[in-house]
Amino acid sequence: MARRFNPNNLGHLDNPLRRLLMPPKGALRRLGVERGDRVIDVGAGSGYFALPASEMVGEEGEVFAVDIQSAAVALIERKRAASGRDNLHAILSTEEGLGLSDGVGSLALMYTVLHEVEDKARMLRDLHRALKPGGRIAIIEFLKGAAFGPPSSERIGEGEIIALLGEAGFSKPSVRRWSAAHYLATAVKLG
Image 1 (cartoon, rainbow, N blue to C red):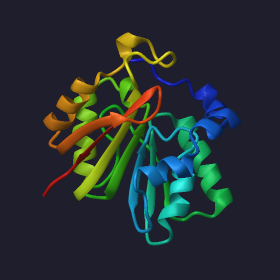
Image 2 (image 1 turned 45 degrees about the horizontal axis):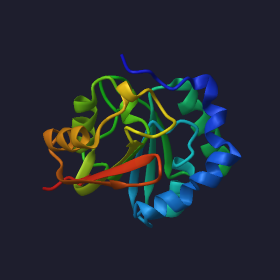
Image 3 (image 1 turned 30 degrees about the vertical axis):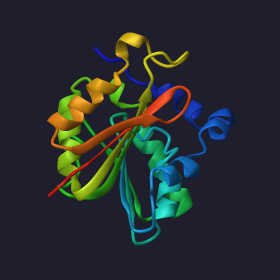
């Protein structure tokens, strides 16, 4: 069984070192987030990417901050209310599904989350369904040889992620280095 993030550690996701090493707006720009996008942030945690994304997509866009932990969804909802961002939606998901409508997103983001998902194929099929035609998926995961992160046995190899994306119906899957410890896998939903 895959290990899940402990919701008691949500505060750690917003620490200054992480912001220095992975500035959320910089990462979102690298992923091509722009005004009017509809971003699905899976495993949104503390809203680390979801809140900046809601600012970047503007009033024309939306952000769906999805998490399986009710504490994470409640935290994001509090931050959303404090920020006044009406384009940010905190959504409690389950192992069986994301709780999103068909074709709602233009970009799905999973930052070091997929390795925690028990049924990766089902998750990726559900994301495929939730993206509109032309929608993109961006998955950032730990390199097999990275010095930190989950145990090696829980990491997803680059070849495995390419296969999973293809099996879920995505086209043009590719992998490239994201950082010293991570890779980025991307693909597109055609038609």
